[in-house]
Image 1 (cartoon, rainbow over the protein chains, first blue to last red):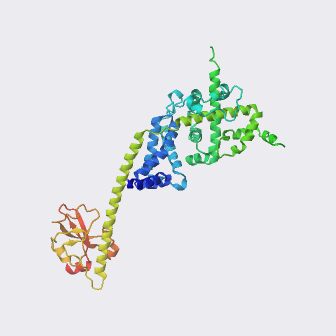
Image 2: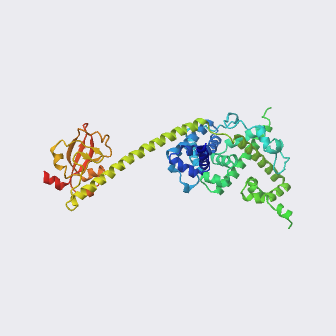
Image 3: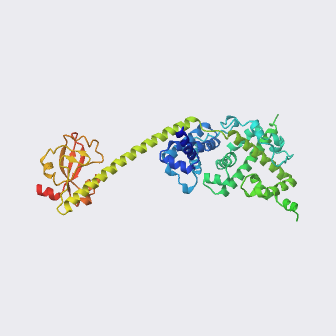
Length: 228
Length: 227
């Protein structure tokens, strides 16, 4: 029992280590440190790859390759050039680009065929509440047509997901990081290796494209087919 | 100008520039939120834009919430742990190899230092353990005349770094060789300490299968006297 009580503080220390601390221990051969580092960092890498590729198998492969790189060549990470998380995202982006070069049909453009979360339900959306500013415009836009409380229905979420999947790659990764992974501009800039201003301008452009796509989809749905 | 009039002074262009940052923590737009909302209150197109942006935010947040728990399947972690263990064991073997080589080189340095003392010391003879006793090597009794003749003037044998069985040399043979400085250097011998610019005499201890197991430098002076 005494030994158990001695181990507990040690475990706490390991789990509280920074990424760099865990990496140093991992390089020294500490399997527990590697496991902790993987469990800490892999979910965001996996989801990033999943959102970027739209394919769970690709996301699994990319996640595996990212951490294989860390195991085989940990010296590739230079703390002076950014955070470990940023390095891992960079490696993931490179693997995704390679995969896209091999197969340009990875992104499932059809929302029905998309592997990404069919779990987004109306219930999930309802938890997020209604419009935050209380405005409910009465125009013919896609957002106002159904009323603010119903925007986040399963159908709307599915349309938004499809719209994100069809964004150009450089815009999609910004939306994934800033809006889906909810990173700050600074964190996204570190992950992508670009200035904060670039992140901000790309995100604004990406969201403008998304709004255009959603309006187009809404209009197409409202206008009956010719000849009917 | 009243506060309310100041709020209304935001233009549609300014509103569009901060629209997507209104709810983003840590951005400049957060400070302008009240002004932006006031502008939207009096501008229908901007109010529409704001509603659309908020709806987009909600949908994206719903996706993030619903998929926030998604992780790679367990087999990925298992595969990575296997790879980690393989990498660790391979690193350990490499380190062991380096350690053995370092020991061999260290032994060679000691040997060379001994030779140096023997050659340049004031009439000093290296006190070896006898011809049959070798540093780190169990040496067989000398099996030829050469070895017997130089036994008193050469230092102890040193196991070669790559010797596969330095202890299993019973019945082995001692062979006198003349090696270039470069060849000795490739064996990790500090030839500069041996004090020779040309060929250097050395004894190789060769096991039954013909594999050199150990080496010792032989003082050229002594060799010259004896041959």
